[in-house]
Image (cartoon, rainbow, N blue to C red; front, side):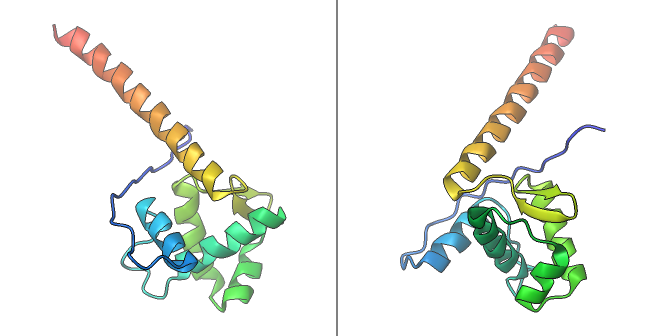
Length: 133
């Protein structure tokens, strides 16, 4: 089965007040990570814990995340799958971590993913154009 990643980029105005929390929320929202349904900011909180663990190079289990954040394991697993689908989180045995150690590297990786996807789309479009001529 082919690797599937859902890349979402949302153009949002940066917050005028720029606390670290607001900047992180803006970055995640711009990457399409946190939806309006995430009213308790569970996905955001999981993302922050995974960011901290990436910097410490210590992957976390879903149970550890649930305990740390006071969430159910089911809620954590739901959001982890969303982050995996977005290409942000990877699974290593029974633990999870961000696919890179820093936010800058994360944006670079998303850019590479996006460029690979666009190049693939362009190639297919050119093949279809050739067949239609």
